Length: 557
Image (cartoon, rainbow, N blue to C red; front, top):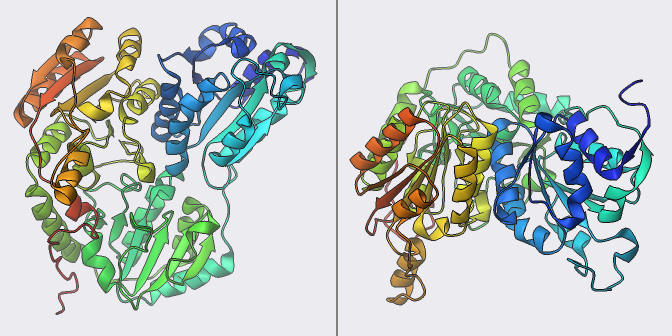
């Protein structure tokens, strides 16, 4: 019998069978009564499908996001309706902001009671409406028979267009019900191809540019387009600037690669700027500062990310990888451009001088990088070393530097790192946290202890919500609500049976990380720190602070 021939199954079994057909290996979820028949179907698959159970629903979506953004495979999470779903939504909103392909499976109350207001267990007035507002696509099962098609459509959405979370709702009675269900072949990847004529126009602009610049964002990482971006930059001899979300698209050590700090030196002098896979807006929602006379090419699969308030330009709708490869192919084979690596080197040196002056963050970042392999994963956080890492941590490959994007989700980091560690058993993951954000998820030390993942957890401890404190003092001259009462994190780690370290310097952190690396498995490292200088003027030009003047890479006045 063909695996796609209709068979009688429970709705839960149909769900699991189609998930496995789509290539799902791991599900992050917490069992509950509305999900019993789905969980039982997972159990029946044995080692072929893992159910990874954290201690809080919030962790399920963060873990699925970290899994997706570091493996290149879709992340899947599953929770009960109502409060379970609500607990997981912060991770879904972060995945939405970061273009992360996450399937959010949500249980539901019995199908004949939806919308009736009977006060069913975990009932919400409009659960579907909430999900629709935070996902790219949403579907709800109306019968057990249609569950495979619903799952298949979810993966079609995940594998086409802009990668963002999708959600399916499964009423509890339909998971238990039996029906004749037919599986479908796995949804194929379906990247959006750009218009050939627009590609030729874009290629002409680049060929005739005096000083082109390539600016790449998270869409380039998501589309696995880093090699194409690098090849294009080398062909046209253009500085290659990575946004915060785009870091890792190209190795920072590449002679043409620059961070968001380096963009300040090249964009004001560019005459053609190719923006690929980026919203190209700053933290205030205004276009990235660049030359007033520059001509723009916007390559993006999302039409909303190429129009106003950005300056007018040539809008090329398409997948970043397919589009960049098409651009490269459209260039003349004999195109020769003057090498610019020496000019970019001046910008790299200037950028390093600016970041090196921010201490002790520079030394802490150097300590971490020195103990990590090129493809090890750093999950940053909204902490002082984390903010600095957005421009100061060298990133050498894709899917190895994770941030919460514009969502700015305090406390996301540890849980997200857990998902990355589960999805990448052969790569080491380092999670950096402040003592404030770590408090959001420290119960997941139980998950670390149970699963013994290769995860080094670094907690910088100063006893405050440090960034909030700094802003309050600067704006109001005093502070409120920012002081923390912490456990002794070293003792907390030992209570969970984890190897722990307590240090107070970059050298101590380096030694602790090296010990953890040699040992393998998990470790918890408490780093006692004081108040640190602000790096914000280097990260955001609009921050009120003396802004360093970058060099002119063209050597002109």
